[in-house]
Each structure stands twice: as structure tokens, then as C-alpha cells.
Amino acid sequence: MTQYPLLTPEEAASIINHNDMVAFSGFTAAGSPKVIPLALAQRATALHEKGEDFAIRLMTGASVGAQVDDALAAAKCVSWRAPYQSASGMRKAINNNEVEFVDMHLGEVAQMLRAGFFGEIEAAVIEAVDVTPDGRVFLTSGIGNSPTFLERAKKIIIERNSYFSSRITEFADNVTLPNPPKRPVIPLYGTMDKIGKPYVQIDPAKIIGIVETHQADQIEAFTKNDETSVLIAHHVETFLLKELKAGRIPKDFLPIQSGVGNINNAVMDTLGKNPDIPKFTMFSEVLQESVVDLILEGKVTGISASSLTITPGKLQTIFDNMDFFSDKIVLRPQEISNNPELIRRLGVIALNVGLEFDIYGHANSSHVLGSDLMNGIGGSGDFERNAYLSVFMAPSTAKGGKISSIVPMCTHVDHSEHSVKVIITEQGIADLRGLSPSQRAHSIIENCVHPMYKEVLYQYLSSCKPGHIAHDLHHAFDMHVKFLETGCML
Image 1 (tube, rainbow, N blue to C red):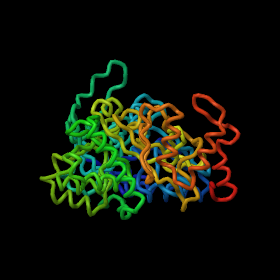
Image 2 (cartoon, one colour):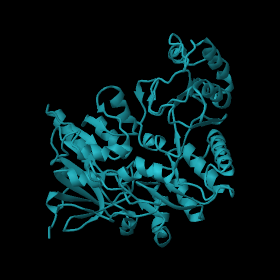
Image 3 (cartoon, rainbow, N blue to C red):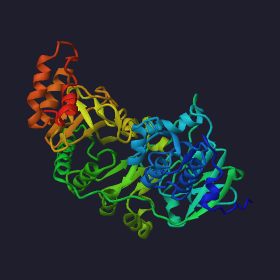
Image 4 (cartoon, rainbow, N blue to C red):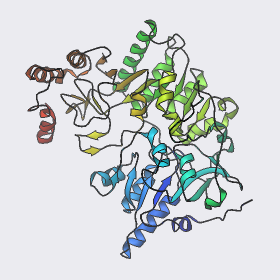
């Protein structure tokens, strides 16, 4: 049996070297390390003041806590970052080309790491509620890519966080997949099936030491549902009820995936209140705030996700009712939660938010005006490409009407029109299934565009050279150019 040395955050940070590939645990701020990254940022600052180079290559599950990413960015401690982020300071560093960022489908990351596409992981910093002398690591509120990080890293530092109830391990279903070829079928046939272990088994000799912490995840509550989000939610509700009545959704419903944000919270709240929507399960990336209440009310009978992306208060509600929640939440590695084959086989209904759509149904979920990164593609592509129904939602305008979210041509495309089945704004619903490009354009403009932008988009469409997908390349980005010049797309 191994006795792991106890380290200070500063001692742990000193183990990491310049240009190391370092992996952080968690998925969003849930389960991400709390103190070692801040000590790493302080170390970088001190070394830079001495004229020494120090920056790491950082791999995570999804994002990490914003305080962590922003501190690392401010200290110029990161030279390369993947696969997703959501912090303003890191975003600014990426858009200023101070950090090389690789935007990736979250479901692909673990396999690419095991294949060695990015080189070796020198060190992994993993938050755990406990670790045993024989190398069993019990993760906290976000599983993410941690099982693969633990498997592949040469050195492992554990942040043992006593804030979490030891019973959080009852949710975990840890499994890693073998590389191709001839991989076995993933034997998961229902949303709540478990196929793995509550811990990750590793060689204990790789664990360099433990840093003790007692900190909650840095997750803030979303703002109260605004009018636009509620209108979008009611349109989603209307669409799903229509599909249910037509028999295109089975009468006992299908699993739902819901992205993160105010619109998704409003949608889940609305679906939960409608008695005509059957009880349902969720097969998603995150469990967020509104879903906890839906589980308590019995509307959501169970959720499979990769993280508990909820406020400390809501997490305490779960801990206080573990006998009730224990069999209603499963936390999985993201290569399982975002697995294309499972999403397709389970018939998931995917509900995600986009930044920009064009009149033919292409979607941009990651870049503003084609250049500046917001957060990244995240897991939306994993679900959108493989869902039974892929629904994208957005307000029809932004910045008080100065920007239309629907334009002639997207400045960046994350999701092609081949996969986007439905677009919903507060204006209405564009059901694109079975429509030709011309029909899609008319449906999107008529049903989803804000009234102040309909005329300009119809004018663009009428000016286009005929073709299967009609475009006028001389004027496809006129609305964007006008915004850059005047501050308004009109």
C-alpha cells in the first residue's frame, strides 16, 4: 500500500515544467481543480519576472472554473489550450493570438489523447473526493476526460476536496474505451444503465502527492427567465407537442439533451410545467439548475450527464437527499455522455443554442463575425449530428436589434444544413425537415427572422444567382460589413 505525500499548492505547482502538456479534471467548473492552477499562475508570474520562460499546454474536459482560466491567462501561463473554454480573460488571450486554441468536439477528445495525437500528458491535476492507497480515484462533480487523463498522464497530482459528500461517488460510472479497430459494443441500452465503476483504477506509483482543499465549484445561478427566453421555450414546447401528437415522438417520449444557459433553463422549466409532456429522462452533458427541481417533482425520472453544473446551494439539496437522488443521476466520462453511437441509438432530442444562422440552416455556435471565439463548439456537434431531432434556438436579434441572428451567409459554420433539423427563435419555428434549400430559406425568413430584418433578407434572396443553394457572393456579407461600419446591420 502507498502513502501519498501531502503537498502545498506551491509544491505541487513546482512539479510542472515549462511546455508540459498538463490536464485538468472536471467538466465546466464542476470538478475542476481549485488551488493548484492558481499556484501555477503565481509561479509563472514569478518566473517571468526573472526573465525565464514558463507556459504550459493545457487540456481540459470542457471548460474549467473561470477564475482558473482567467488567472492562467493573466499570468501568461498557457501557450496552447484545448478543447473548450468560457472565461473572458482566456477568451481575450485567444482572440489576441496570445494562446493557441484548438476548438474540438468534446466527444472526440479522449480517443485522440489515447491515440497520441497531441503528444504525451506530462502531468494531470485531478480533483477527487478520495483516493485509496491502491490507486482508486473517486472523482467529484465533473467526470469529463479525467479517466483518460489518469490513464495517460505520467505524473498525477490529486486535489482531495473535502467539500463534497463522499456519497457523490454513487453517481459515477467510470469507463474508458479501447482504441480501434474491433472495439466491442458499448453495452448501454437505457439512459440510466451503468456499465463502469464508481472510481478510476490507476497505478498508485504515478500519484506524486495530494493537496488538501475544501472549496465549492465556482458556479453561479443563471438570471431569471427573460421574456425572449420564455417565448423561445414555448415554441419548443409547441413543436414537441406537435411531434408527439403526430406520433413522430413515441408516446412515452425520448431522452432530452439540453445545452447550458438561460434559454435552456427556460425550456426545461417550461417542459416541466406542461402536463401534456410525458415524464422523460435526459441523456446530456451537464445537469444544470432547473433539472434538479424537475427530478424532485418527478417530471425528469433520471439524467445521465458528465457533470453537476449547479450552484453550491442546489448541490447541497442533492447531498441532503441522497437516498432519493442516488439512482436518478449518473455521471459519465464525456466520451460516453457525448458518444455519437449512443446518442443515435437512444434517439436523443437535442436542444442547443446558436449564435448565428444563415437562411439555409447552417449554424455558427462559436465565433462572432467569423473571427472572435466565444467559447467553442463544445458538445453541440456531438449531439446535433447524431440526434433523433436536432433543434437550435436563439433570439432573433442581439444588441437591442442591431444584429440579426439570421443572415444571408454564416461567417463561420460549426453545423451544416445537413444536420440542423429545426430552428426556433422567439418569432417562431422553422421545421427544415424535407425542405429544399429554397424552401428552407423561405421558412426561416418567414418564421424566425425579426420583422425589421425580413425585407432585407428577402431582397438578398431575390438578388441571388439561381442555383441549388442561391447566393450572391458580392453581397453575402453586406449585413456584417454594415455592422462593422455603422454598428447596426440595417
